[in-house]
Each structure stands twice: as C-alpha cells, then as structure tokens.
Amino acid sequence: MITFELNEEQSMIREALQGFAAEVLAPGARAIDEAGEMPATIIQQGWDFGLIAAAIPEAYGGGGGDRSCMTNAVALEALGGGCASQAAAIMAPGQFVSALIDFGTEEQKAEHLPRFAGATPVAASLAVQESQFGFAAEAQRTTATRKGNGFVLNGEKRLVPLGDRADSFLVLARDEGGAGLGAVQAYIVPRETAGLSVETENGTQGLKPLPKGKLTLDNVELPGSARLGGDAGIDAARLISQARVGAAAVAVGLCRQATDFAIPYAKERVAFGEPIGKKQSIAFMLADMHIECETMRWMVWKAASLLEHNDPGAVKASVLAQDYVRRKAVKIADDALQIFGGHGFIRDLPLEMWLRNARTLTVLDGPVSV
Image (cartoon, rainbow, N blue to C red; front, side, top):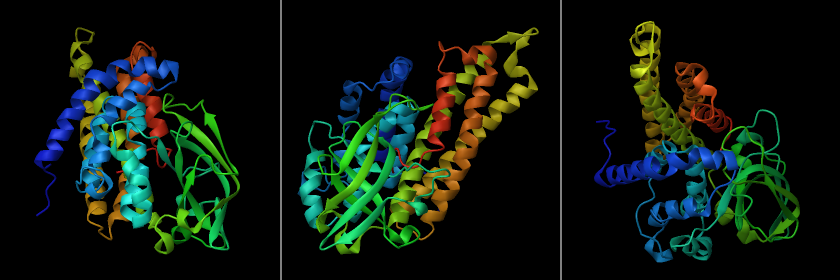
C-alpha cells in the first residue's frame, strides 16, 4: 500500500519548523532580502534544531538517527514556507554531511563528520553549478586528472551556497576523458588548498541574502584520499537527484506560502461591489494554485521516498518532480502577485520577492539536498 502519511517524528519536525518559519524566518525575510546579507543568528537558530547532527551516526558524535530523504524534504518545505533564502542557508551544510554519510569511506567520515555534530554551525558546501548556458550535471567541465596517487582539479564553480565562508567544499568534477554522470566524482577540497581561489558572489535576481561564492580551481593538487568514497567513488546520479529534490521541496514551501497569503486578500478585497474571490477567474486561479501545490508536494515526496529506499526509479522521479516544480512554481508565485494587482509589485509586500526567489530556485541545481 502506498501512503504519504508522516511518522510521528516527521510530524513533530514539520510542526516545529513551520512555527519557526512563521515566527522567525518570515517576519525578517524582507529586511534580510533588502540588505542582501544573512545574519549569523539565523543560521545558528536553524542549526539549533539539530537536523544535520541528528542524521550523523553516534560513532561520529551525532544523534544516530537514520538519514532520511523524506524527513529532509519535509523540513525543507517547512523552512521554505518562511523564507527560501534562509532555508537554503540553514540547510546547505547538510549536502556535505549527507554525501559523506552516503558515500564516504570510514576514514573520511571519521575525519569530517564529528565537526558537524557540535552546537556551533559549520559552513561546508557542495559545488555543482558551473558557468555555462543550459547547465547539465552530466556536462561538468571541471576536470579531475590522475597524478600519481592523487588528482589535479581544474575548472570553475559558481553560486556555491555558503561559498564566501565555507571551510570545505565537495567539488564535482569529471574524470578526464570520461562522459556522462558515470564519469563524475566528488572531491573534498579544503578552503586553504593551494590553487583554489574563492570570491564572494552577489547580484542574483533571487535568493539574494544566501551567501554565495565562486570557486576557481587552477591545478589544485589533492591526495587520493580526497576523492569521496575512495576507489568506489560516488553515485553522481543519486547525489544530483538529492540536490534537485531538495530545491524543489523549498519551492513547494514558497508556493504554499504565496497561496496562503493570497486567499485572505481575495476574500477581503472588494471590487465592483463584491470580494474579488467571488469572481470566477480569481476563484479558479486560487483553486489551481492549491491543486498545483498539492501535486508538487506529492511528486517531491515520492522522489524523496524512492531516493531513501534506493529505488531504481528514484532518478526518473526526481527529474519529473524537478520539471513539474520548475514549470508550476513561478506561475503560482506570479498568479499570487497578479491577484494583488499593482500592490504585488510594491516592496512593502513580499510577493515580488517570492517571485524572484521562485525563479532562482527553479534554475539552480543544488542549493540544498534531501
């Protein structure tokens, strides 16, 4: 039997994060967006929920819980319902941790995971995005070339979450001469590594407060132990799928927020003698927004569940969920803005910010992962 019922722990996490999103993230979202900066206090408050540490095995100082893609999807949606930028900043280190748990050798886990089990936030990030038109994970241009027992990395990564402050990066690179995702591996690159330069990036249309960085790798020499998973490597298709579903989950939360914001206004705004919500065109628009939010959620949860159970259909499900969310999220944010008319463009209201954030979420692969 197929069920989307959350277990008791997931329901508690969802309720707690929805409250945090409504009481802390949402009220400060506009000011943070205007400033274009992410307060350290927000990252600390998000870290205090222990979502990342809880998934780390007890042997490495964590909570010992099972790493759950479904739980992460629920958490990302709840946080995205408060502010997409803050949600991404809070959960970005989880990409580094999840990849270590899924693919890391025992030595790599022992070296890195205990750092994420403490009370102080640790900034580390997955570097996926590159400067190319029509980004595709299969077409990674950053290369990893064998040199003795190690590797030499060359290339460039853009819009790396927390890139301005991260002390370690998990860089995706293609084995020189290889093709497709089967040739893509991940490499642990400390910030101080010779040949790696890091620049702060600003100026994106949406997710403006999310700290971002540009990485330039110029003959970066790494030991063989830097390759995640050692000789076994990683399943790049799975890693990319997790990133795609994570971004989609945040977008679902944003769309739910926009829909819930528009409904009361449509009931109260009177035009031509009656609330605009009674106009058929507006009523149908709101109904479609609600339907699409529900549909996106089930597609994201299905993909997350398949990933969690290592189902062969997980990659396909993640692509379908990503494609559907990309097509519907921007429309929902735009429809919410249209319901408010000209007021939707005024920055006293969050609608234009949500539209910008929805557009950015739907063109990036990898700000967060499930």
